[in-house]
Amino acid sequence: MSEIRQLPLFQNQPASPEDLNRYTAFKYTVPLFQKHLIKEGKSQHTVNAFTSDLQLLAEHSGDDLAVGKYTTNMLNEFLDWLEHGRGVPCSRKSYARRVTTLKVFFKWLHQIGAIPHDPAKPVLQRSGPAPLAVILSSDEIRQALLAAREMRRGDEIDTRPEMLYRLILDTGIKKSEALALKPTDIDRSNPRHPMLAVRHKARNIYKERRIELDPDWVRLFDHYMSQYMPHETIFNCTARNLEYILTDVGEIAGIPTKLSFEMLRWTCAVRDIRAGLDEDFVRDKLGLSPVSWQETRSKIRKLIDLQAAQEVHV
Image (cartoon, rainbow, N blue to C red; front, side, top):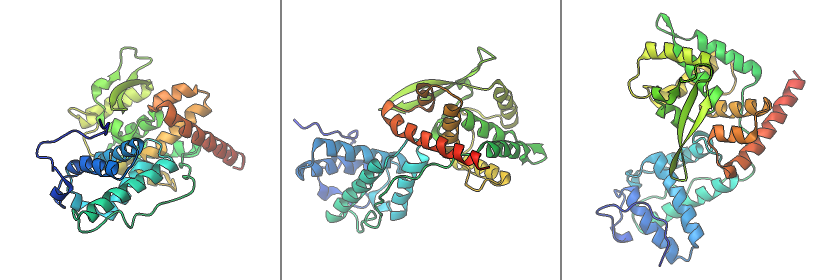
């Protein structure tokens, strides 16, 4: 009996490749693609890996999107998200396989006549090591903090830029995790050591990790809540709005590289390791598995060496 790893079954699911067309929702194509791979003699490992890659595409674009709606630009944006926006390390090997998955999947859809054009064909496969992340220097951290504190909302000082900037810099949480935060996720039971409860998904299981907060940040957070009065989640705006806020902070501070969630997450990790915090503590704080941590740890060490060398020459 086959052990095909499938996405959930749906009603009215097409029974054969002949039932697929450009209006078919993405979610209906994957089980048939899995059967195609098995028919082509692909190993169970390959089927599982390709399916996992397609689940990431569904997470990024939505599994209800019609397959005929995909464009080359959308696929390139997806690959960029895997490397820079998802908040999970994407090795060169994983990146290369995911490009291959896209090419095999959309080529199959085109060959069976489900879509008129293959959007993955122009997608370029890259080689070589992934570039190191760009992080903030100590001076840039201070400059960005000063810039965030001076930003205004009409005639008032806007508390959101500083609150957001310090939250991500101090905790290293991902953008998706920040967007999901609720006021009740802040534990004030010990005023000297307030904690943030962050829920993250690992291997389809939701887990919770707790990160200590600066009591001064909690006071700033209270000012923010009074100013913005969000209802359910702490941030009552879109992810793009939060990205714009960080970009503005960086531009006002004169930071040459675009300030982003990813930059602050890496900066947080480097600062913690340089401060002498235990590596397992930092790994848990970032919500990474032991396997993911191996590559991340190596990059952090390289960033620390690079930053130390730059400081010597200043």
